[in-house]
Structures are given as structure tokens and as C-alpha cells.
Length: 122
Image 1 (tube, one colour):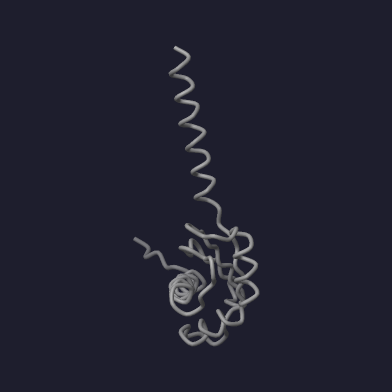
Image 2 (image 1 turned 60 degrees about the vertical axis):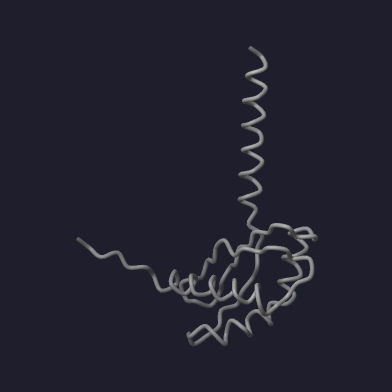
């Protein structure tokens, strides 16, 4: 049986996810952030670029505005990332809003609403 090997970019992406989660929680404080979760990191094959997807809860600022603020401070995130990430080049990073959970909640609410509307029709 062949032993499945993860690509190096996948391993680095997982490291970046762990490190960025820690940086967001402890080192770079954004006012109004609430709870931010790094849901996914996609890193290019050459390890030069990483897309970091975030989900938010309990924030007092719109998620899109938080992403703009975080992308303005990307140098500070890269600085802390470079201290902990043990590779030759620190990848360029960019933050994106992952609204998967919000979309799932909307769909769930629509399903529940349609179920309750359907039971009342009997």
C-alpha cells in the first residue's frame, strides 16, 4: 500500500495557520475583532504566497472592514510569522473573509423555516 505524502506547501500552510492563529490571539490586537478563527490557509507551490481565510464571531466591526484593517497591517503579521516559520522566505500573505459559516447558518434557517411553513399547511 502506498504511503500518502502531503505536499510541502500543505505542511507549510498548516504551520502558517497555527502561527497566524497565535499571532491574532496574542500579538497583533485589532480593536473590535471579537473571536477570529483561521479557517484555511492556501499556499502556492513555490511557498511565496499564502491566502489566509478568516471567520469572525462577536465582532463589533463588519468582517469586510476587519479584513481591510488586517491587510493594512500585513507587514506586522509577516514580521511575527518570519520569527516562527522555519523556511528560507516568508511568504507574502493576504487575508480573506471566509463566510462559509454565515452561509451555512442562512441555509439552515431557510430549511427550518420551510419545514415549519410546510407543517402549518397540513
